[in-house]
Image (cartoon, rainbow, N blue to C red; front, side):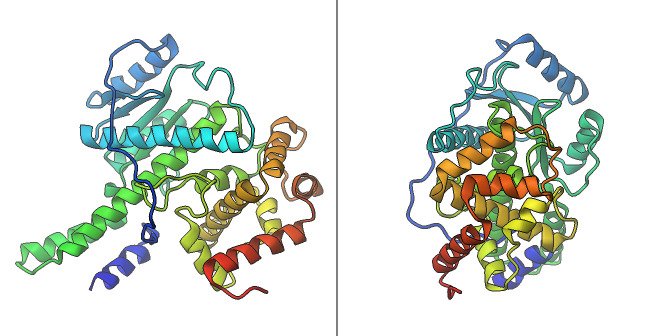
Length: 355
């Protein structure tokens, strides 16, 4: 019964299955610092602009973040903890690549501003009003122009609501509902929300620390792949590209066993994320796993490649031309040899036969 329920959720397109955790250090309990005022003038103006339109939002603060949210305080505190852990993971990543963070630490405009909605409708309304974003499939985004990240709680995902409503109808008719089903919903929602929070926070932190800007000069596979490589396999585990597995590893291995992993050349050629759902999934999963492998196995090359993307402003992200391949091979060597090493290593880790 539970397997059928999980397949229903996956078929709805809401979630990915997550591997059970292995032995690892658990994160500490959520903590939050609540203060008023004391921010720079620009940030205060941005906060007041949001609060004037959404007066029910409460203001929360952690060491590096200002959070505006209409979620319960317990959820806001948990998300504050996730944001701080994302900041630490980015610092670890930069240390591994020997790429110092900007001296301002991204705080020239004050703490990083995060806007979190309980309601998907309010999230979409805000995205259109504030940032002229009208992509209804989004669960969260970072706006480099506005300097804030925005997301909604995964509990208001349409697929989750449909399943929850179905279970509620069973209960209303007096039919028994397996508690494991309710626990599965809660687990999936928690994991999906954590993935969105961390993914968008990494976009914001890398951009505002001037490590990898969210601009057209940088290839989409690198920008999305790095953010995806930070997504946790389990929210209680440590995460980041320095670790061998992330929240996209299991799906990548499924694509690998089915022969549906995109080639490195196709990732370099992409100028936008694929529009087809399946292709988009394999694009994000492949980019995330490749970025993690490069950080762990080719840190000097990865640092060189990212630095090159920072100073090369002559191309407008025409990653499909010879310059995109040349920049990659200048950092990592011949693409065919690197791809063979990467996929052999991933096949070995997945217990699949090597070619």
